[in-house]
Length: 151
Image (cartoon, rainbow, N blue to C red; front, side, top):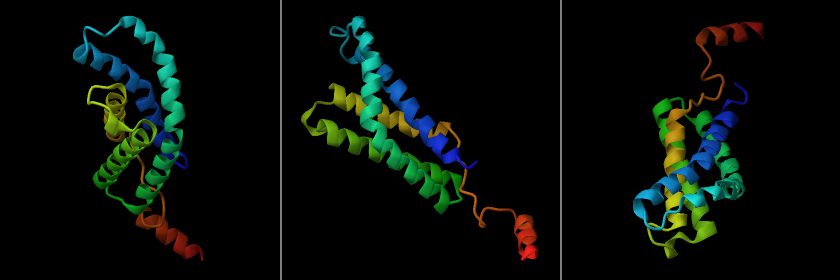
């Protein structure tokens, strides 16, 4: 349980990094079928490495937010909503810093990759389970009474 928030954030981050380039290629089949070249799939490893490099710091911040949210709230629905929102906001922020999204159209690479990553972060938040932080407020009453008698 000690590392559950770390693993939770890691699963979400890696899932997004691995699947987002695939979603980009699939989106190109629908949005640019004439220009879509299946030989471009060979750049997948490059895209994956770029995803991991440019999102590493964002993942660390995301993990810190998950730790804070898990500590601050017991309600799982609220926890998941907050983590989803934070993940989407961090994704948009990262892409804004590195690619200046406002200068691209809705079908260009940076914008489509940002949407794919944001969608996958939000879906990963709900797909994977996050545990609340263990503290005296989340322990059962029987455990608290046992600890109280030992003093």
